[in-house]
Length: 266
Image 1 (cartoon, rainbow, N blue to C red):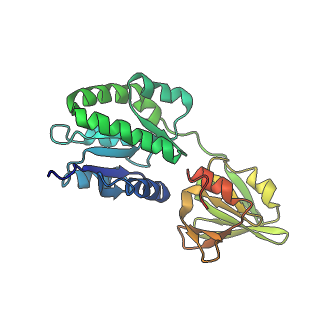
Image 2: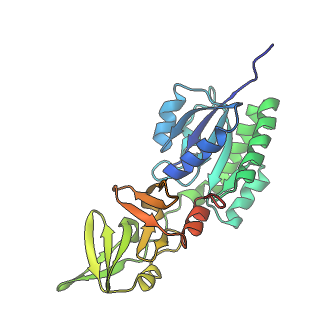
């Protein structure tokens, strides 16, 4: 009796929680073997020197080498995996994916959407037509890579008054904000700044897609979130990349889980 075929899979995403979620979902399918979960394109290129995957879950908008850069540097003569793109593109840009018939997961995605993509991938891999796939892939890259590579607009810097000077803080450097009575503590770039301002008013100054209130006295940057931890009593906490553990209240937990594509989980 023949053993069932397993599809070798590599995950490439610069967000730790996104990698963990895809890995968790794939572990529910015994016909998929995850041979690597890479934090960036460079790691993926190194792994592809050792592994020949059947399927690649690929984040497009990564720092440094983006997803399309990675595909262009892959040796298509030896490695031609099927690709499921993971993206936060807007609806207009996604039309290109539909035109060229490429599957994608739009962040945040639901479990059933993930497994639908997986089933389509199985059907395509069983048909085994890599040459046609990669021909269409080059057309897609040529169509949308300029949008991916386009530099983002400079962020609105946030003025922070200190004694007799005002410092301008890039929101991308802010890890989290903690309430302290009539003040808030702004933690950015390894430094702590004290501001006399309300949490809500300060939150309104921050990019809505990057920051989230997780407690009446805490705002976190999603870019600096390392993982979520659940205590024995059911309470949740956000572990930040600098090691700080921040409590997540029941009021704000649903929105945090939704942002991470984990809506409905407790």
